[in-house]
Image (tube, rainbow, N blue to C red; front, side):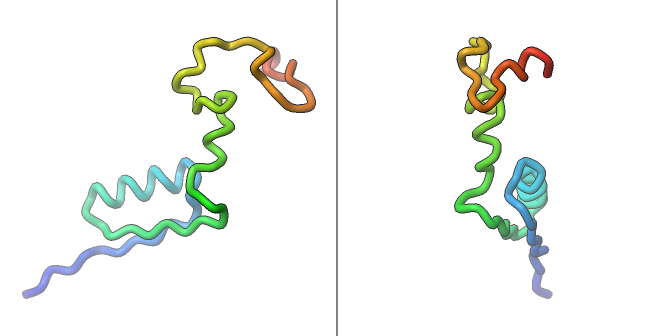
Amino acid sequence: MSSSVTKVVVVGGGASGMIAAIAARREGAEVTVLEKNQRVGKKLLVTGNGRCNLTNTDIDISHFHGLNPKFAFYA
């Protein structure tokens, strides 16, 4: 009797797609991630002002970029 491997395709390599792919792989599935951008997780790089909210302990308005950096005051 041969064992079969579950094959999973995740469409989208954003935060949710990557978590889904990791969870499926941990359960033993063979995982393929389809992403239209050049690399997965690209949008995560802009969260937390480029620090993915993990090490952004030096929060200052001068570190935020865009048309309306003062948006951070209200968010």
